[in-house]
Image (cartoon, rainbow, N blue to C red; front, side, top):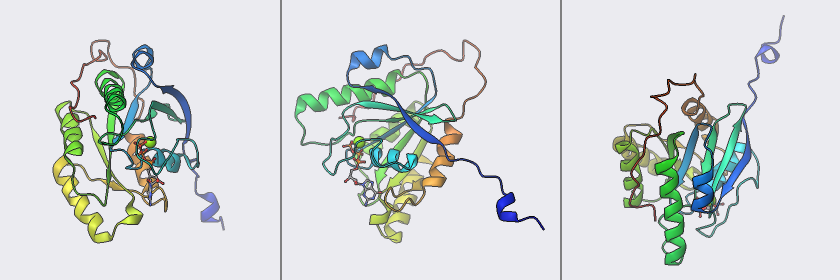
Length: 225
Ligand code: GTP
Ligand code: MG
């Protein structure tokens, strides 16, 4: 009698590899975007870089800190074997950094979101313990206005009660019309489900006809500061 457990095909989990770290507008502008990308956007400290590490099942692939404002560059991670990229962005909405520094990050985020021709989706990270913030709504509106699919992600699920989580799920599903995924980079809750959503959104298809593949310029969300 064959053992059903050993007969079951094992699908290897995808891996992540750092492809590029872009600190300046010039670096961003000269970067050749040659593969689909999904951007991880969200307020400072929401858990973007921790989520990259949880998805990669590694501890120090992306830099994490308890102090907001840790990520200062646009970091592209290639998903293997799929071929698309996850982009870890600096966070927005952190008031305690200097004005000049915030302006540079805002410019980087804005430029990345507006000018990346291969941007496929926005993974919008929202802290499940914090009430709806204006900056997150503005980011959601930006995606809607530009028909950019959104994957809402409620982070730090290990730190909120089921009741809080389900209230946030309902709120964001109403705002975006898409069911959020609740995740925890600590307990790894929701990581497998999130991988499925990301792989679906980043799937590489047959090359489009030249006129369909043309770059579309988007207008920046005003909140990205
Ligand atoms: P910036 O780079 O500043 O924009 O922040 P970020 O969004 O990349 O956040 P980061 O991943 O650096 O995490 C911020 C803090 O939240 C760190 O202290 C993490 O350990 C903590 N954190 C992140 N995810 C989780 C989570 O799922 N659960 C808990 N309990 N803590 C988390
Ligand atoms: Mg970060």
